[in-house]
Length: 260
Image (cartoon, rainbow, N blue to C red; front, side, top):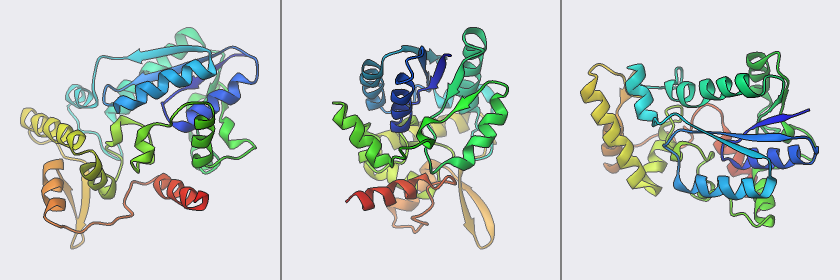
């Protein structure tokens, strides 16, 4: 038996890898780099690898998220994501097919994300899929972070900054209005980078539709990052619960409140 751990740099993938390591079977940590990550993700990745062991395979396509949009001539959104497809799913699938077609694939879904497993199992069939954090003992994200601290590893800083995930530096085309406003507030330089990239892309490829969506008098509007920044800075209102469709932001914060 061997395992391929989809090692995203998130806290659940770390704890998943630790549980895989207890099997005594060989395993590989597979990381796909978007070149749009928070710098602290790389620190956590290296420290986590040193702790859990196994081989670390680092896949880098030499493209950023914005490069993937340029290449696809399409700006990602909640429905279509060239970034994830080009930089994560396709490279990982190609590597697994070439190097470990019989391995069990390990994902960091926890016990709050059971609704995601069926689609993953169907997509990767006939390879076996295992989500260790959906097995007992069941841990909250806070408990997982405490486990990392007990191991001498500081959790990725994006969690402490109020983000539900440690991916793409806090900017994801699938998130909602509240997370974009939060990114502007706590990481204004990161927001400025993405705003500049979006403005540049839309100048290069006129007609692309931006990914921030907002209902106005029953009509759905699409806003650029520049428009959204100007709206928020002017005191514009938005739904503070709009962090995207997976609800992980509120699950994480409820867990944190319980821990306190």
